[in-house]
Length: 116
Image (cartoon, rainbow, N blue to C red; front, top):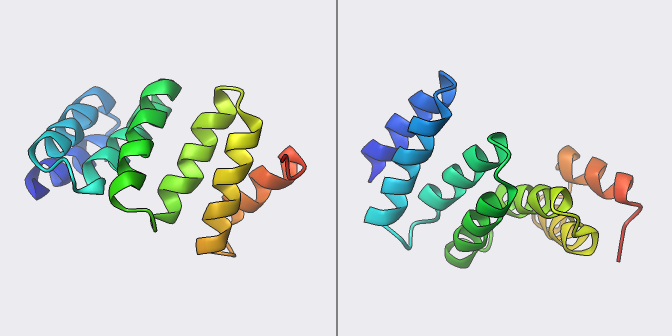
């Protein structure tokens, strides 16, 4: 499983996003309860503009690792892109609860005006 994560990271770093997504997806298939495959593929999907796919992957990642601040933050980004401002704000607030100095979540929440 880690081999797929590592290969995916190389592909991500060289901007071969389809290959990265495939390797992260394989990691998630092999170890479905390990949040890393889901989280990493979610990031790639957001990079590719697949906000619904990214959201689904972050849902899975958070199911298995509810303390992952970056999954909360990135899921908020996916929700924001899909027009769910309340859901996005809730995710950004959760990210800030876990890591109060996370600037990307602070900035996003400020731009939303703390949407409720």
